[in-house]
Length: 91
Image 1 (spheres, rainbow, N blue to C red):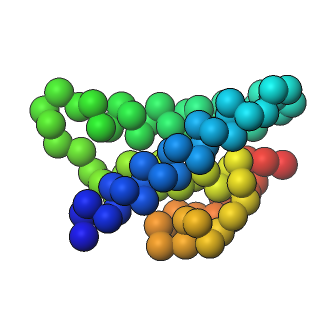
Image 2 (cartoon, rainbow, N blue to C red; image 1 turned 120 degrees about the vertical axis):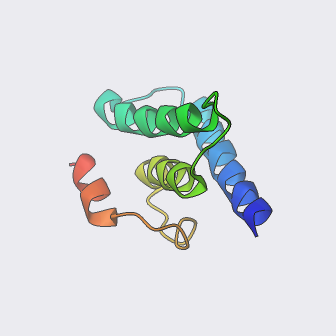
């Protein structure tokens, strides 16, 4: 089960990477700050020297970053986060 969750997080991260590379003209830097912040937090958790990390935390941060870019609830439906507060970041 954990392997499946990690695979899903990896796919979301790849989609984010592809979108960031595809979008030649990044228009909303304030919007992208939130995306980058969430990705950085996920990476920081994964690289904890103690070797312990919370899969739920990493899932949440990657899902928020993905949702901020794509607004696709279906892709992040099984990961729990407050979509209303995330949506307010875009306004």
